[in-house]
Image 1 (spheres, rainbow, N blue to C red):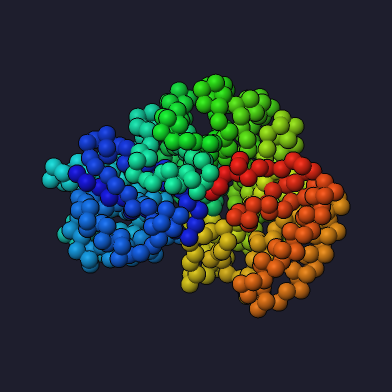
Image 2 (cartoon, helix red, strand yellow):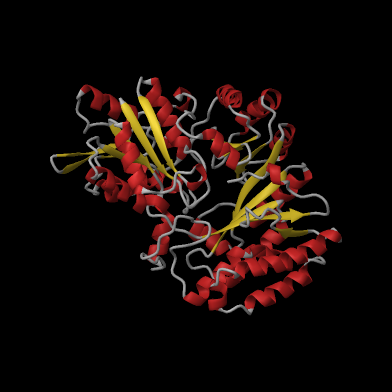
Length: 517
């Protein structure tokens, strides 16, 4: 059979969907044909419903599968409408994290025939097999279906054994173009699942959903079988397979907690160093590295470790984000990472539900103290189906009339216009306040810049030219500080204005080794 994937990925960083890539590989292994419409301006396929309809009808698929997140849910639902009203006879299945956490909403769309809940590697193959053979399509675990106007809500299946996964299917993407836009960086996953349940993360919602479906006492990893580790040899073989087909410059391990299993890491990292050797970056937590792992990572050419710092406020951390990482542990690990010669990167969330502006400032002060090699901040963005969303709803803090494609720069949380502008100033120019608290000769010139930013009115700040004027002033300040080799944060890469880099004399994170997206 012919399956057409549609992946809305516009007005945001470009990248292939790892989930779609594995599902496509599973379908091809079962003998089916696949194609993907990757909707992203970077690959010259902008969001155009008429073009999507034309290309879909031309392919004549037996099943259309839309994979999307909450940021693109309205457009995904519109695509379903356009396809069905435009003459598509094949059924439509939706999947992805928005469908998983908001299945009732999605399946009630009159143009959606099936909704995949959770991982689709096995359920998509089962559905296509049933369609091909004319079998019952309403009793497949993980798949909600419609029959005679009724919704059949099938239970979820236990989490699959990831050792059975074929390698990602990268042929369905314009992968070389994606790589070119990312300067040779490739996103990969090694494991599945996460040991933590931070409220804002999809893992929180998925674990709760699976607890209900599987009837476990808790959403703990042991009972759910949620954490699944990949055999190091299998991962190495996939990396080498990608390298044999593309001119890869670096790998980005996008696992939520890449180093969560020390024995696996101590087996994998020497193997990587010997057989792959390319620079790489990863996500992990301050609780999941120690001196041994950091040394092994350094030996394996790890260029950057990305840590979620998120907030400096214990109240927000404990009661809103429900993270178990202390500020003291964060300080300890950032210092150790620096000592071991591995670069660090810090993520932070500003404007969480119920957060005050002094608390936001405390987070920027902490980032200044940690001195990561790179940093990026985002605005708190509650997604339906997460506990973070529920907490915000209880506070009546969500503006349901707002919706954005890019969660980094905008938020659906309620703020007055004055508060929203102040928050936008923090988000846009956050390193100004970090430098103001870095406690060296950089502080004074950035305090002067902050005074100028504070004096900008709401209307002036909203003017399209204002941000660039401020950044031009900052560029002059940074240039003078570079001459004196003063340590400070700045944005040396103009195509990545949301990422601040720590300049330490002549040493700072090079453009070529910055993960583009």
